[in-house]
Length: 88
Image 1 (cartoon, helix red, strand yellow):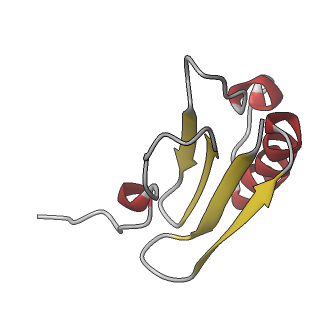
Image 2: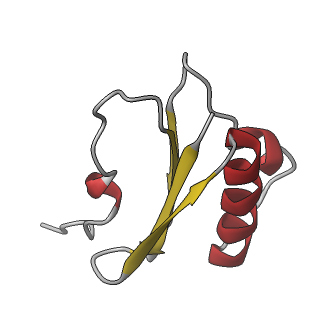
């Protein structure tokens, strides 16, 4: 099952990569999130997507990474992760 990885700087530049499998997308997302500052022992398992959980995302104050399966369901982009937090 194909999956898409979206990643970038919140509120600025971003990119996306379509992967041939959910496993390949999880591997890419795991590496990107590590570079962007995500830590923890379960980082590898965090990026598992399936039909029951079709999208997983992570964001820091400056970056975001999102993985979604491409199964024909219209989910749209993970645009909420791209916006910078608004401080009151």
